[in-house]
Length: 268
Ligand SMILES: Nc1ncnc2c1ncn2[C@@H]1O[C@H](COP(=O)(O)OP(=O)(O)OP(=O)(O)O)[C@@H](O)[C@H]1O
Ligand SMILES: [Mg+2]
Image 1: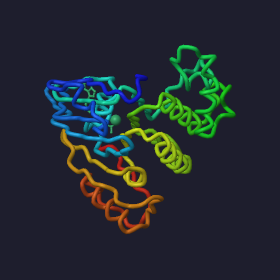
Image 2: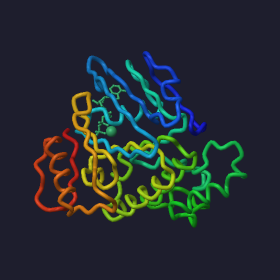
Image 3: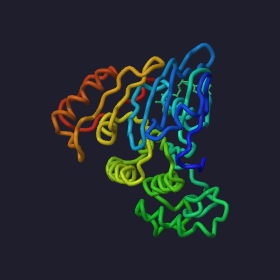
Image 4: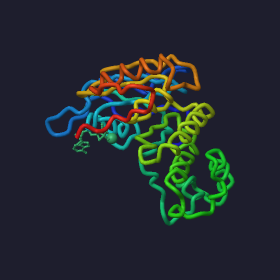
């Protein structure tokens, strides 16, 4: 997962790598993706195209296949049908930071590098980017939830992924830490320019961060809305509120009055 800029076909009925080999071609190409568990097609004909630097947010009720889609894009699961072409260098960040407890923070950042000693400086530079280089020699158990998730982000970006996959990365954090993490993620993505897929249940988080917000339901993408609002985005902006209302309606939630955050809770 380290050959930046090259594409790999990870699940294909009909794909060839040349589909995405040309310059300026999409970074991610998904066509007719199906994933079936038992007799249920959780993903049933997904089409998706992302270019370098695109940032999409994926919303949808619990159990609609958001994590399944992310896992397939990340190479942790395979499609039953369809074509999936993705950059070879990909990273995934989950809700939990998943740090190795027996390794110091800096070692977690460069986990898997061939010569750990040589890459310590690189690890510290990555930690500085997320504002926690002073914790480089700490053990993961001594970090707060927000700090640990910063380490997870540093680790994800250290390989310069062409595709960054985020599965509810801030869901376990308190509201203030979450706001700080939004700013941090936006700055990091601006600098590194990976294609990003952010899965979230937080409609405001989706609109604040993404260029497009997609809603997944019943195996397919039911809504794909561009967020044509300049940054920084204000939750009080009428365009923000309109988009929010549209998304909540699609998710089957009645929009709350006012401009406060709304989190769509899992349906079951
Ligand atoms: N390996 C598996 N075997 C069988 N069923 C699975 C497997 N992985 C996922 N599923 C099922 O597929 C459906 C979609 O799961 P997935 O985790 O992708 O949903 P999700 O949209 O991420 O939900 P949530 O918002 O709760 O995280 C669920 O019904 C789940 O039980
Ligand atoms: Mg999930």
